[in-house]
Structures are given as C-alpha cells and as structure tokens.
Length: 402
Figure 1: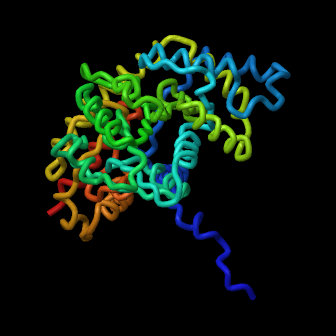
Figure 2: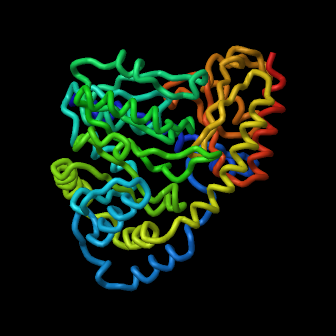
C-alpha cells in the first residue's frame, strides 16, 4: 500500500474561497427554509444590461462562435479593451498587450504565474482579497503582508511599504478601490507609491476591477497612467464582472508588456484555450458601450453604502470607516470578540460570524479570510430592504453582548 499523499502538497495548501463558502452556506440555509440574509458574495444584485444579453443571444446563433478562437481573445475584443482602457484611465496599449481571461481570477493567477519564480516576494496590503494569497502561493511566490487598519482608512503608506521591502521583493500588488475595505488611494498617494516602486525597480500588479465604483467625489486613479516612470513594469487586471453586473459570464483581462502577455497567453493556451466566444461577444458589447448602466448601479450602491455605514456605526462595539469605493463595508468588531452573547463567548471574529449566522440568520465574512482578524466584510450589493433588515438583525443581536 502506497504511503504517498493522495493530493499534492501544492494543491492541499490551497484554502477554499471563504467568501464563496459563506455564500454557499447561506444559500443552503435559505433552501432549507430559513430566512437568511447574505452579505457575503461580492456581486451586483442587478441583472446584466439587456443590450449585452441580446448581443450574446445573437452570438450563440452564429456558427463562427461554435469553434475554437485564438487563445488570447477575439481580436475585436482585445481592440475594444485597449480603446476602453484609453477612454477610462488614459492608458494607451496595443491590442497585443491584452489577454482575455476566464474572469478576473484567471488574470490574477496568470499574472503571478508569469512574473514570479520560487522565493520571489510580493508586497500585499492587508486586508486583502482572498484569492491573492493562493495565486501567489501557487506561483511559488512569498507573500509579505503590509497590515493596515481602520485608523488610516485601510491605506498603506510608502514608509510601511519600504519597511517591508527586501532584496527578494519583486512585485507590489496595488488595489484601489479595494476589496474588502472599499479604500481608495488619492492621486497624490498613488503617485507617491508608484514612484517609490519605480525607484526600486519593482513590478506593480494593479487590480482595477472596481474602477467605476467610487463615491462622494472620490476619483479613481490608475497607477499606470499616474506614474509613467513605471514604464513596462505594470500589469493591469480588470474585467466586466463588477461594472456591468456580469459575474457569471466569466470575462476578465490582463494588460501588460508584450513579453509578459505573450508568456501568459502561452500558459492560457494549455490551461483553458479561449474564453467562451458567446461571453466574449457579450463583453465586447459591454466595453464598447457607454457607462450608463454602471452609473445607475453606482447611485444605488452609494445610497446603500451610506445606510449601511450609518447603521453599523450605531451598534455599540462596532466601528466602520466610510468606504470610498467598491461595494463593501469593513467594520471593526474587535471590541465584541470575547464578550458573552447568547450564552457563548466567541474568541474570534470567525466564531462571532458563525454565531451571527446561527442566531440572527445573517451571513457575514470574518476578517480572518482577509488577513486581519477582528473585522467583518459586508457587501452592500443587495436590495435596500434586505440590507436594512440584515443590519437591524445584527444590531439587535450584538446589542446583547456583555
């Protein structure tokens, strides 16, 4: 009998997506008849705009879309993504510098797989999205956390980044607007960080998928445009999921120097080949159109954002900075950890989240999933009534803590 492990150490080390796990548990409880309100999943509650769906329907009827197409993406979509990038952030690239991927997650994985050798370090600002650590780990990289908290609005300083840099640092992961905190770096902060990275010859991988979801006069700044001295050491990750309510269509992209994009395309040619053609045609309709659909969603998200932050800050022991972008709030619940609640004394935010799901039938994602225990992430991409009801249940339950 072989004593070798059945699963490789590399894959065994991967953790399940905490956000998807919370969402799955909430949906299972709902299916069992419990009135669960889920703040877990990061997806708009709006349908994909009709004109995008119609483009997909037409594409499905066209036999040309029933065949293989270039692994790196349909040429017309790559051209449209280059034009959209120039329109939205002022950054000019050639279509050959675009790789169309199966959602933003594949873009994340392929960026790190292409840039990192074993032992290369990546500076990652915490709290961070749950997929980044796993993609870095799979590529053989070493994640170095730069931990922020509510006192700075979850923004990292150049001084913090410099303190974490070593001779093995190769990449800075720059995310603005941020998932899970909603933090957005100002132009001045972005320029300072970008110039620091350029000075030390670092690569910058920047995730811009929430670029259009900023509020209250906040402006999105692309580090690639703001810091031209970074030159060809920038890789941009993006996609249609959040801007156009297309999470299920699975279309993202990676933009970078030609040699990086060519190498990542080679990887994708063996991993998945082309993204589904019908989804690519839908994405073409999305990025080629105007931004009126996202403007409507942004108005609703902004209203919900203000309601959620106000209600959370009214709960004793909870402090929530105002998120400037994306569609998440990231309140601190550190004061509540260890207090007695319904005969139990949760010793971590993960245990507190589990108690809340059981007792209040509200699903939140604990900060442990994002590298900073003592916090919750709540998505406000759900209906207004459910949002108010869910936070009201939270408030009622947590007010009993003593």
